[in-house]
Length: 403
Image (cartoon, rainbow, N blue to C red; front, side, top):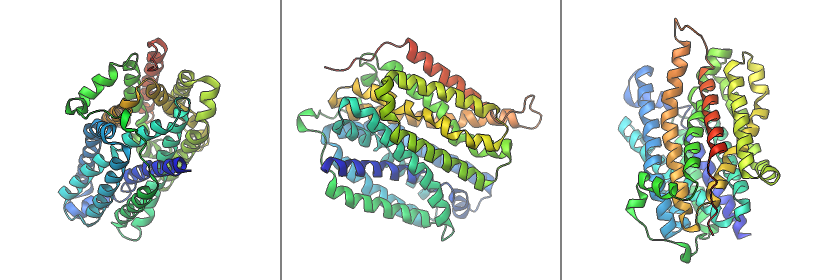
């Protein structure tokens, strides 16, 4: 019963992290205009600064927080991060300057780095054979937050421009109270290791995890996968408008539909897929379906079919949890936090690189006078990147499970 309540808390925390990322999207342009007094074009530049600050903090602090949790345990890190997150949203709710908003997103990026600790907690309480399935639940929680964040932000913005921040603070605070009473420590004292700033350095942490037998190719797969997959949030709204003439309502509904379908896949299909094919084949099959999906979106011209085929294409969502399962099972218990911190940092780098690359490709193929007009070109690039991922997995050395 206690493990069940702890799992609920962890999933709620991941979901809240995801909500926190998306809840400000609907109000961000108007909020930045309000605090800067600048037109929308210049406000968009500040929006880029806020996004970069968030991702950069995740990159820098993912290994730090992961290593701290390997030393002091998961529970204190999770609870402290939630307390800081709640206070941070309160600060952003009353911020009257752009620099206070930047500081708010910096702090939010640091607290969101506890995704690594949440994932390590799941690894602690799950049997090796069940870790991929449990990681799928985390993916489902993130997907639910991806749906609820923009939806809540849009609804609450009709009340007040800053209402989404007050709501996010209340949600984080309520989860903190819940976690204080139900979250036991998952990392036994004998499995803890001393904290080292050298290993908490993102690059040093990469080396420590990359030196484990057979893991380095998988880390490259995670990075390339993230760059490819981030094409969805990077250009989907622009793509929908340019390709299908969608307005904001249709773009929002298409994203919500995708998020719901992905959450269902990761919640209910990861476990059966692992049992049927094993983690390696599940990863390859999922990535192969990703390739087909990106090619489809690269060429489809019907908005109806773009949405209708979504449930089939989101079946590829089994790949990421299976890949995490391979990495986790090949990592010693006292390095689970460090591993998840490294994965968090790799994802943050990918999330920083992808928007720049994908929006540049989109611009090149949709600008006035483009030799080939193709709003779906970024998705075709993503398909090529997924091919690279599959090739790496096919020729890679096997990861060794620690004794």
